[in-house]
Structures are given as structure tokens and as C-alpha cells.
Length: 612
Image (cartoon, rainbow, N blue to C red):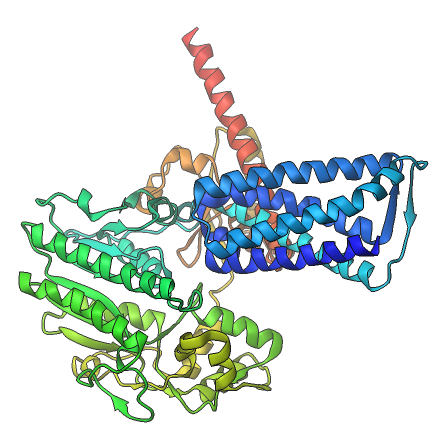
């Protein structure tokens, strides 16, 4: 049995690597709406694995219990085979993931071959669960069982979250705009693109989105954007006032093999060429093309202060940026103003490089890379969005523009600032040779020194709101939005459960003298500015907070309870790190679908009764 447990531990290690590296870091399945079916299968498999791992680590399953264990294993195999089919149909698996799946299947086959005689013997014994102890292997498999249970709950939370589009979870209030522009944004589903599109939508602009995954764009932004998979779908008579090109595969997503370098290059050049071809055939030319680039343009420069007139450097990143900018500059031949934003390390909430760095620092302390003396040039996301605004508006701005903060700093100083902000030590130092051994030329991302200055921005009068690293980190890591308190609740009067539940909250508010308005969704038209239809309001609870935000689901319930003095403890409880995702899962997977389905069936029955 010890050999079986060892093979199970190997299976767990390989599976954990597959989940973390391929599913989460590379494919980002927990953020892809089209991956919801695959994630549901992963969830089911992980919730089956958890009792199997813990069970065989500490008990001998005998008699009827052995048959139950065999049934769990058979179910898991059916789920895994179905998962293989779904994966092949919905996404392109990289070669390494296919190889790993083959190794997992071979190891599992060997495991079952060794375990089958033991299982057969267990079925012949009297029904009982007998405690056993296989020493360290029992402890190891028990830990893996707890880990796979945690990952299963994480995937279940993702399944619940992906079931409700982001634009319905976090609606945007659109400001009145008498002369809206039409803007084309590529790379809109990335970290910068998401924030930019939401900012433009709030201003009432008309947005066309080019995305390799139009379904994800619709999931994020809803019907207010026109999501396209190809620019060929845009008619030559279509008026487009400006283009922002952010498209490009992330450079830090894996080792720079020859194939990956080609993908990094083509993901930028191909889209940029497609954009310039669109400009060429449009009858009404856009006024400006704002094209992303990166400070990788400058290459390794030591302590030299770099302005926009500094030439391109050496190395793959420099070549990548140079060819990207050349492809965009071709639009000037059509009379279009082109701004090439050489973007530094982008820091912000909800994504980007700071998220994993902050997590690692919280868990293990800060890390100095190499000697720590190489310069890092960075920019806060909010300042970057303001720079894009300036590039769209300022007709005198063109050419290369350094989109960085005015205060670059050595990497050791950045690591110290991050560790200090999180109140963690700075104990680690990774030698440059080790980084290059592990990452090859990709180590340039972490070791190249680029002291870049935003000279053209400062000359144009731009002032950074978060130009110092301490202020930027404090805003991102510590200045959370105030806890939401409800001011207005929209009630689905057609649903008896909703009507009764909100009636109780209203009575509590009146007894406590709390100014909390309850409005029927059938009569209130104010939510049209948020892009919500009446039927969408009936499927989910929405509240408007005192600071003007619109919240839904569990967040809406918590905001209502926060407004009621005697129930604020419930709101505090619901926002705890563990209870919050569980509450969201229960609401999104069970409460909301069951109530809305029941409400719709009652409405159909009433309509049929009236027809009779």
C-alpha cells in the first residue's frame, strides 16, 4: 500500500503543477467565461479527489465502503475523460500540457494496476472503516487532500463568478455625452485595456473592441461595446475617431523559446499591421493612433538617464519594441497622428505585476534581484490612463512618449518600499546568474537597468497624481474603498420571497429611523443610466450606495445590513475572507437562479391563465 500512496503523492504533485501553471497562470481559466464548463469538471474532480486522498491516507475501506470507493474512482475517471474532450474542443493545449496529461495518465494507470488487488481484497472483508497509519505518506496525502479541497472550492467560486457577467456584477453609470466619440480599442481584455474601456464607457463614448476572445469582451463590458474578432468586419464608411492599440501577448508568460518569441512578435506586429490596413481603407481617418510600446525599447543602459530621443538598445525586447513602433508609425502616411507610449512597469489593483509580487512578499518577505542596483521605471495605472487621455486629446503630442513616473528607483529600493508597505522583512537575494540560468534571456525583464524619464509628458504640462513609489503602493495596497452602505434598494415586487425579504429590511430601517429607500424595479427608470434592463433587475438584487456605487448579489445584501445598526455585524461577517466567496457561491449558484426561475415560471403561468 505504501507504493500506492507514493504514486498518489506523485499524481498530486503533477496535478498541482498542471493546475497552477497551465490552468491558472498560462490559460487563466478562472477568468475565462468560455472555460466555465471545463472549470465545473475540474471542480467536480477535485471535490472527488479530496475524500479519496484523505480517506485512503488514514483508513482501510472494507466491504461496502470499498465499493463506495470504487464508485468514486469510476466517477472520477468519467469526469477526467469528459474533461479531456471539453479541453480539446474549447482551447488549444500547449505541448507541455499535453505531455503532462500523458504522464498523469500513465502514472494513474500504474497506480490502479498496483491498487486493484488491494481493492479486491477490501471488498471481501466485513464492512468497516479501519484506521491505518502509513507514516509520512499518510501525512503527505492528507495534506494533498486538504489542498485539493481548497483548490476545488476556489474553482467552484470561479464557476459561480463566471456565471454572472462582470458588467452585471459591477455596472457602470454612463455620464451624459452630447458628442460621443467612436474609439477602437485593441487588447481591451488585458489589465490596462479593461480599466481604459470602463473609463471611456463611463464618459459615454462609443467603443469598438478587437479581441481574440469576443466572448470575454462581452462578459466584461456587456452590450455597450461592439466586440469584434477581426477588423475586416468594419465597413470602410464607418467613422472611427481614435484608435488605442494595446494588443500583445504578455512577455512574462513563459520562457522565451524560439516559438514563443515568434508569438510575442506576431501578436503585436500582426494586430498593428491590421490596424494600419484598416486606417488605409477607412474613408474617414481617425485623428490619432495611440500605440502601446514599452521601455524595453532602450535595452540595458546602466545609470544613464533616458529621454524619448535616446536611441533603441540591443536585445530581443528592444527589437520587439522597435518593430512594433515601426508598424504603428506606418499610419502617419495616412495623415494620422501617432503616439507611441513606451510604458514602464504598470502598478495597479486587480492585475499586473504587483499582484504576484505583493503576494510573494506577504508570504515570504521581499526579494532583491541580482545586486539590486539596476533601475526600475514604473507607472501607476491611473496615471497611465490619464496619459492615454492626454495622447487622445493633445494634437501637439506625437512620436515616442515615455509613459513612466518621474521617480524611477533601483530594484533594491523598490523591493524595500514594497516590503515596508506590507510590513514585511527583506531577507532574500536572488543572484543574477541563477535568474539567467532559470529564465534565460527572459531574465532581462528583471535585471536590465533602464532609468527612463517622462520628458515629453512633463513638457506638455502633465502632472502625475501618484508619481512617488510610497504614495502609489499606499494607494494600491491600503487605501481601500469605504465599506459600502446602501441608500436605495430595488425590489422585485413580482417575486413573493423578494417582496417579503425586503419588506422585513424596510420595516427594520423604519423602526431604526434609517434613511433607506426601497423602490420597485417596475417603476424606477433611473437604472437605465447603468445599462440594466428590468428583467436583469428581477434576476439579481441591486442597491445603490451612499457614495454612488451600484452593487449586486451578496455585496448588495451586505450594503443593506451595513445601513441597519442592529445588523451591521452580519455585514462584517459576510465580508470575511472565507465567508465572502462561500456566500457568493450560494447566492450565484443556488439562491438567485432558483428564485428567478421560480418567478419566471409564475409569470408564465399568469400569462397563460389570462389567455384562457
